Image 1: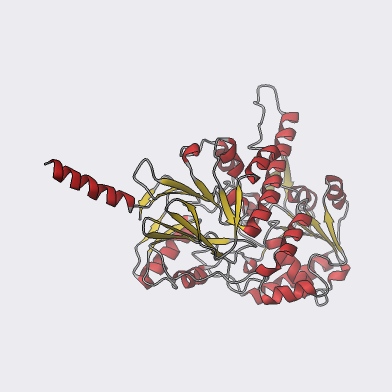
Image 2: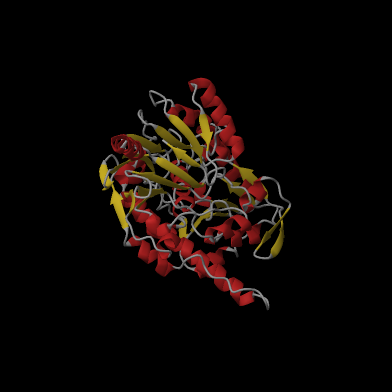
Length: 481
């Protein structure tokens, strides 16, 4: 009997050591707040814990208030953090994680490591500013607003960051190996390959479309036991990029004839650089010399420096354009504003200005002040060039709201609102299916980072084509590999 018990214990030990377990805590039924916890390389209770992304939820006031909630796991028990890229919905809660006790390494691609402090310092600055404004005006009985984290908290994060190059397989913990591949979404974006317990997990991060300017196409991957794949646009295909560029030029021409300004809410990393790329390409035929172009972002100059340091990550055409004239970030009529005073001065301009400012979903940042000044003007044009999450001001505007509230002010929407869909930094349904089609044999698939309508459509298409039983992740769901 003791021998049988010993053999049974041995068998259980072997089975435990080969289990990789996933817990889904964010971007599981929505597009923001990416956060997935992997347990591997050990018995239950002693396995290593690797957190894939630690993103901020963006959208409604209620959603964003949840960012301050306790993490759904013991922060001190996490052994490593891996960040797929430097967008706030993938990195925005990292300072809070560290503030609450995480002391381990933070792995990310080299360009992402350079972008990380820029993005997080900006998020902290916005949080501090919002808290200061609220507390200055708060009514009797209202609680003081405390920022989610401060710029000092961000400085603590940076001491734990360990940059990695693409295609460099690295042992990050005992029994756990990591490799990063180019995801083609923004500079430094990565597909995560993770090996442990004889199993391979692939996390797509955010995948870019093939042919995106500046960036290389997403790297195909052929082997995995389980794939976590984003599904932002799982239910649709993008408009042809060439048609989109024609459309953008037409909007600028119409805005010039109307005598108004053009406002473009854009993420500071990714979409802004692509817009400047197209401005440089079409400088003459769009007659851009007649406009004043404002890149209204305190982080813009810092982001340019990061791009200048990482030309090796550009595609061949972008490398050539960056060496040419006009350089996308050195257009002769480009004004990069850093100070609040410079930003406020733009509001005195009623026509002839192209204003690019964050945030991309109009959920915060300097774009809000420009919207307050311009939404009521019939000659003004607002151009959305990326995904607008549920509950955001951007989503309300593209859905046709006639009135919106910004900074406790009700604003009538008279401006012309455009959605330019072909500039997305996310792969569409065809692109996602093409990328997953590289896996042979087909692994298990979990769809994350997508609303249910998009995920259900993509799951149906892949299931029909590949015979794969697709799982839709839910918050709190646990899955064994």
